[in-house]
Image (cartoon, rainbow, N blue to C red):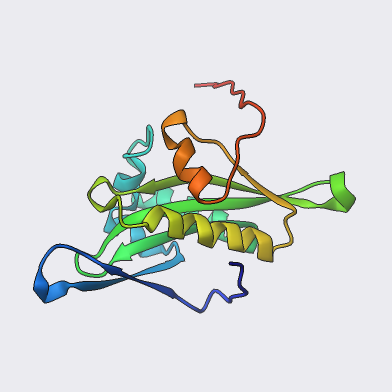
Length: 172
């Protein structure tokens, strides 16, 4: 389901957690990355996905400002566990402007990860829905992403299908 939204809204997802009867209902909001999220474990979460060296506060702030200057063309979203104050899920989308398809736009989803202790609670699906809806609201005619074979079934459940083959050349 697609919807319109403004960034001033925070979307709340209600989930039943099996932890204890005292906190049977827990709410998670999907929101844009904030500068203070570095201190909430954002970089450590990315390290669960791939190689991600430590980033100084200055480096984080500079990159955060650079990405923020792109406006809605580059969005990083997060889910914060309000009990622990930790970032437990994230993903990003950037909008590529093309000459093809009447100067169309393509959304590229990247860096989707859910904390290993929070997997199985549909948080990844909520991140993908949020990013996909953002790309659609920006006028993209398609959204693409790369994933490992192990994650293929997850993305298929989110409505994505395999198309073509990824190629890569690393410089480092």
